[in-house]
Amino acid sequence: MTEFETLEVKIPKEVLLLMKKERFVQDMKLFTAMMLYEENLLSLGKAAELAGKTMDEFIEALSEHKIDIIRYSKEELAEEVRFLRSYK
Image (cartoon, rainbow, N blue to C red):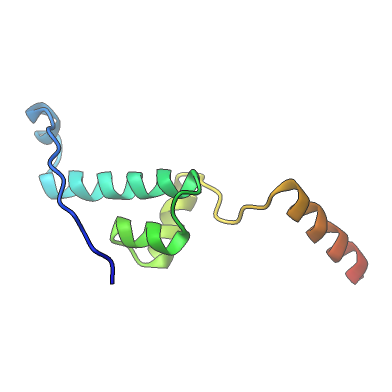
């Protein structure tokens, strides 16, 4: 079971006048999760959990923000290409 901790973040009031506080918190969690996923600091599942999304919802958010879901190193990609070429 994942343990959680509460953080206090100071946000200028004029920012919160633009959107509801709950929406701001949801967006912060989502964008933080996407950033940590993109930097390979969280797995897809853990990032989705942090964002408060299902795996499908999180994958959709990544896609909307043009963040790759499937990532290969150059070596892994070359191996996949070799495999697929030999499969013909």
